[in-house]
Amino acid sequence: MTRPIIGIIGNATLINDTYQTQAAGIMNTEAVAQVSGGLPLIVPADPACASVPELLEACDGFLFTGGRPNVHPEEYGEAETPAHGAFDRNRDAVTLPLIRALVERGQPFFGICRGFQEVNVAMGGSLHPEIRDLPGRENHRMPPDGTVEEKFALRHKVTVSEGGPFHRLFGATEVMTNTLHGQGINRAGRRIVIDGHAPDGTPEATYVEGALGFTLSVQWHPEYRAAEDPVSRPLFEAFGEAARAWARGRQPLRMSA
Image (tube, rainbow, N blue to C red; front, side, top):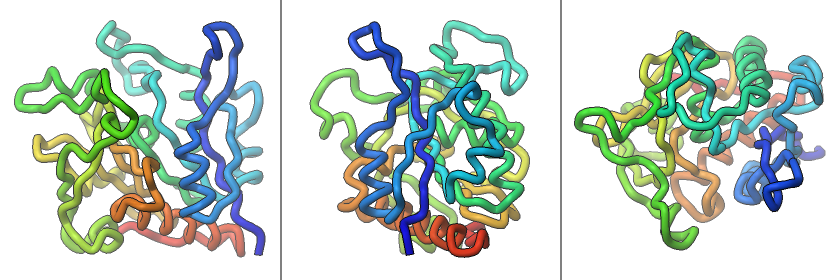
C-alpha cells in the first residue's frame, strides 16, 4: 500500500529576517519518512490556508512539532506576561481544535515539545511559563551554545509508569532523553494522563485517557537521530503503525493503558 500521509505542523519562519515561510525541521520529516514509514506533508499553521475538516480528510496522522513561539496563555485563561515569551496565534488556531477533533475521531497524532504542551492546552490544561523559575526544578532549556549534537545530547532520565504505554514501547520504566524546553505542564487537561516525569517532577510523557487512537506526546525531542536512538525509534514506529491502520480503514490503533 502507499505510505500513510503524516501532516507535520509547520512553524512561521523568517528567512534572512525578510521572507515569510512555513517550515518544518528536516529531523521531523526524516523521522516520519524513515522511521514511521509515512509520507511527510508540511501543514501551514495558518487557519487562512486550511480548515480542520480539510486537514482531517487530507492526512492519516499528525505530528505536532516543537517550535520557539509558545501557546498563548489566553488559551488557558491566563493573562500574557513577558515570561510567556513569543507567540503564534495562527498556530494556536489550527492545532488546538485539530487536536480535539483527532481525539474525538480516534485519528493518530504524536506531540513533541510545543506539541506536547498544545495537547495539554487543547484538553483544558495550563502551562508554567518558565520551568526553571519553580522551586526545586532544573533548567530544561536548550544550551545556548555548542554544536547541534551538544544541544540535543541526552541530559536527564525520564521515569514512566510500569505497565503503561510508554513502558510497553521502551521495554523499561527509565530512559534517557534530551531536553530543550522552557515551559511545561502546570495543570493537566481533561483526560490527560501524565505517564512520565523528569527527576525534578516535570511532566515529560502523556496520553489521553480513553482515547480510541494513538495520542502519545513527549516533552523532549525524539526526532533527533530517531532511527538510531532506542527511545525515539519505538515512538515513531508505533506512530507509523497507527497511521497505517488509519489509512487502511480509518480504524484507530489504541495506545493508551
